[in-house]
Image (cartoon, rainbow, N blue to C red; front, side, top):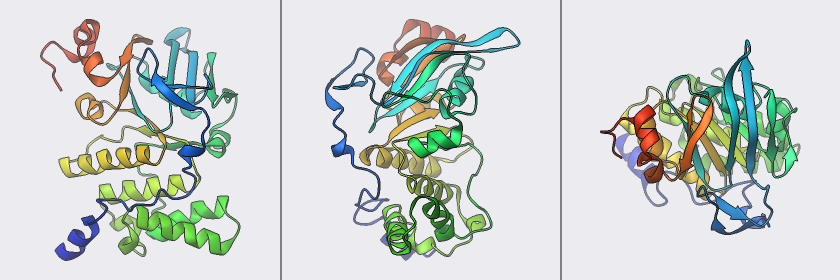
Amino acid sequence: MTTEDKSNEMQGEGQFGQGAGPGTDQGDDPGVGPGTGNDGAPQLVAERQGLRAEKIGKRFRKRPVVRDVSLVVQRGEAVGLLGPNGAGKTTCFYMITGLLAPDTGSIFLDGQDVTDLPMYRRARLGIGYLPQEASIFRGLSVENNIRAALEVVEADRERREAMLEDLLAEFSISHLRRTPSLALSGGERRRVEIARALACHPGFILLDEPLAGIDPIALGEIRDLVSHLKDRGVGVLITDHNVRETLDIIDRAYILHEGRVLTSGPPADVVGHDDVRRVYLGERFSL
């Protein structure tokens, strides 16, 4: 891409196009109400709306790894699941995605119990998942990556192609449409992966280690992507070892320690928590 092309791409709407695209009718959700809960989460008229884990637990060889963890993610917010190594955050995250089954507790999506549903059925209900490893179809072009997902959810060819054009424009990747996926940069690949995930109309997207091994430019792109998903009305749950960078892009965090929630709340609150500084961040940590 030339310098002029890059400049044109970033003008006007910023990195992303204006339209919210398909499946983003946040205003149609009757559950959203004013105010916030004790942990900073938006309060809802319907108490069990959103993506919610209630007292989930997991043991491996009789050793408890996750114990009575409860958390909630609402549409339009970004939430971090953080903690020191061995805290249980990855196990907890995988139970919410459906990669692992909890031994105790339940997972709810807008009040529906999805605890026993496999990952693909959770995806159909609106829980998207992006792993740390590249999940793009490497043998396909950018447009065919997104088209492949659209073919699963939209039978009408004309509507499918219109949705494809909307997603390409929304994520400023129209100029890359025929580019082989293997030729994309890390930030471009993430945009394609998220555009493809949004083809299935998720209400929530779970990001596994999205900040691992990226440079400052790519970090800025991830920050913009998360902000764009929130604007679209999508709830985002992130687990990552890069605590400072993650706290910079989320609205709330749950800090796990020894398999339990140590505390939760906005980044400034959890950073100032004495026990969090003692067991995780250290006394000199600052945002």
